[in-house]
Length: 395
Image 1 (cartoon, one colour):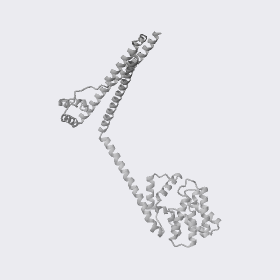
Image 2: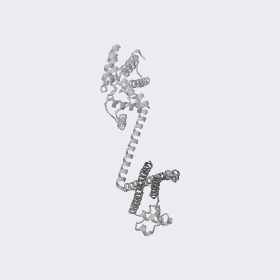
Image 3: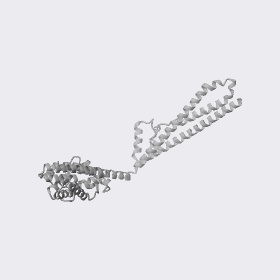
Image 4: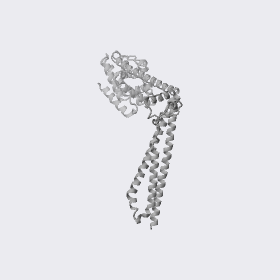
């Protein structure tokens, strides 16, 4: 490495460190290093003279310095910066012209006119043939977005890369064509496969959406089935809640009676406790009433467990409730169910009947439960007032 190339390397490093904006996550010092490395690989496998090698490496080091000034038209800015650096280091005009021509040759729309220009063009796009192409390409996509140049979606960027590989780019040097193009073609195959996978995925989602829409439009029964399923489930939950509340009241009043029997009633024989007789009786009576009502709210109704064929044919029996068939032989029950499922309207009618009967059961349960809570509340209030009056009269 010549002294001038070392100076150019340091110059570029310091320039990027001081003036290159941090949003340049692709066109930065690391990118320049990759291009320098690829250039050296090409030089080693291409016949060049020493002076041309130095000019080429200087051009590579300086070719992206224009990004410290602006994005679009950075090649021209790179030429200005390069000329300033080279003139300060007393480089002859012929070499400066050679270097500036190489820098301008890095434009993607230009056509290389010399071997050196072909080398720098191939080195600048060597990442297309590397295993890390996808990572580097993603950095470029994000940089374009950060610079407000253009925003690409991942799918759009995939299309842009395929277009770059197939239409806009080609390698010029014999070495790149022989050694890099096969790797570039592999990367292109990966891009095309991704594109095909995305297309298949999109097609699959479209077909799924179409089938779903068709199923939704052609099968309103699904909504009807959901209606019955949700409503029946809600009724069952409400029935469970009612039973739980009744059990709570049953347990509380049982405890109250137990405490009364164990602690208060045995002491009523004493003359000094006669004033507690009426309040205690009120408490016990209301507690017993609450227990009775709680039992009535949870007590199941006993049904015959049998049905006739006439009832099934006339649709006057609910075969969805176990209480109407638990005593029937399986063959007759099976016949009855088959009669239902033969007719779709009969199925829905059976569901309606089951829902209606569940509603009646819930109505009875919640009526009794409301009455139980009312009796319990009145009993507690009355008992407390009675005890207060009894103690007050004792004074």
